[in-house]
Every structure is written in C-alpha cells, then in structure tokens.
Amino acid sequence: MNPTIEQLQTLCAIAQAAGQHIMDVYAQDFASWQKDDASPLTEADLRADRCIRAGLESAFPGIFIWSEESISTGTRHAETFFLVDPLDGTKEFVQRSGEFTVNIALIHQGQPVAGVVLAPATGELFYAAQGLGAWQSQANEATGALALRVAPARSGAPLRVLGSRSHGGPALAAWLAQLPLAHDFVAAGSSLKFCRIAQGQADIYPRFGPTSQWDTAAAQCVLEQAGGHVYDFAGQRLRYGLQRPILNPEFLAVGDAQWLQNLTPLQATTQHP
Image (cartoon, rainbow, N blue to C red; front, side, top):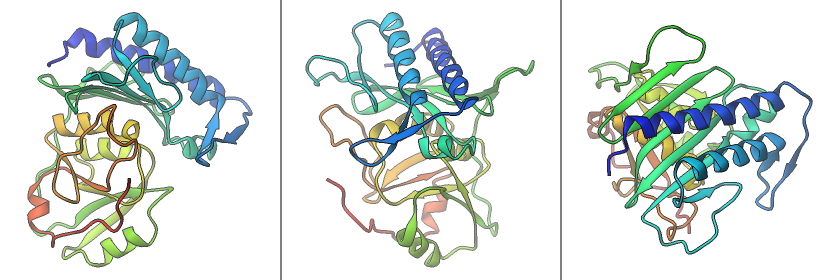
C-alpha cells in the first residue's frame, strides 16, 4: 500500500490544524492533570485530538483511528488504521520547552506506510510515505521541502547518541557506559529524536522504558523512509497493530545500520507486556 502525495499532503494539513489548536493553548495559562497512568493531560491534548479525528474521518472515511486520547468504535481487527498522538511530549509542553509534536501515522499490515510529525512551537514539519521518501518543510519559509537522508557512518567519528529528556535512568546510563565507541550524548524530547536522525543530525536513539505505539509510528516512518531503521533488542523491526500490546518493546532507532556492526550485542533490560 503506497499512499499518494495528495493523501500525504492532507495528513500534513490535518496535523498543522491541530498544531494551531495546541499553540492557542500554549499561548495562555493552562492547567494540566493526571490520567490514570499518571501521565499529564492538558486542554491542548483534547483539542488537538478532536481536530485530528474530525479531519481524518472527513478525508479518510471508514478507516479506524486509534489515538492516545480516543478510539474509534467497532471491532479492532483492521489491517489498515491510523495511529495518532495528538500531543507527544506533554511534559515538554507543560515545561514550555518547545519539544513537543503532533504524530499521525497510517499503519498497513503492521508497518507505518505514512507518517507526519509536526513540531508546532518551531514550525518544523516532517512527513513521509512508502514510495514517496521523507521530507521536511518549515512554516513561514519560502523555500520548498527538503528531502531527508540519514548520515552515513563515519570512521573514527564519535557516535552521536540521542536520549529522552524526560526518561532514561540507569538503563540508559549503563548502555552508554559499555559503548565500545566514543560518543556524544544529547537529550531531546518527543518523537523529534527520530527526526533528528532522519535529518542526519544524530546517529542513534536507544529507548529504554515504555513507549506506546502512537509515540513512535509516525516518526518511525519518517526515519525509515530517510534510510534509517528501528529495531527492538531482538533485532526485529518495530511493528504495530490493533491486537498488539499498546506498549512497544525497548528499541534502537538508528540511521546508518553500519553503526550496529560496531556495537557489542545489546540486550533489553526489561520486558514489557
């Protein structure tokens, strides 16, 4: 299944409309509260979710939508569906770091075949689809879209490692400590970590601790279409599905796969249900 450029542009427009709702809330004093899983929730999450759901239902009628904040009615057996995180990085949003995103992915037979990642605070828009490649554009700039391609592995250069600004802990520290390569580490928020690798600005993102399917699908599509890879610690490509667990396994997002040949075998520290 290869989405058309028109369908991808529609997804971009839906994400940008949701981003405007988010920034309207961001410009005000706003409250946050905790969901049952202790993650934060704001009015921006809910407004963006309503906007995205309305847009998808209008443009792609009949396709199941699984969002962090809502889910379509009906049976959950579709091979083709949307995975949505209306505001990825709510902690970053509350802290006003600017590193939060809108994520919209189209899944077909377990794989993301289209993905849009918008950073509303910076205007960065990343989008990709199977057969169309990966692209970046910038709001309010006259220049056209820029094709994305991961950076090749560089002999003798330090490995550029990205990690979560809000998560990580001892497992990440232990992974970094046993790296056989010199490395530079930079913390970043939300799904932008995948996109920085797709831009060629970083090489690898090891993720320890839980992420949900909607956290990763859109950005995985961007990275993979830019020539990168996302593997769990068993070496399998990260997959998605309505019947699969909400939580992903721990994983490595990497640009040039050659980097993996230079690393000692790495094992996940925990197993998620």
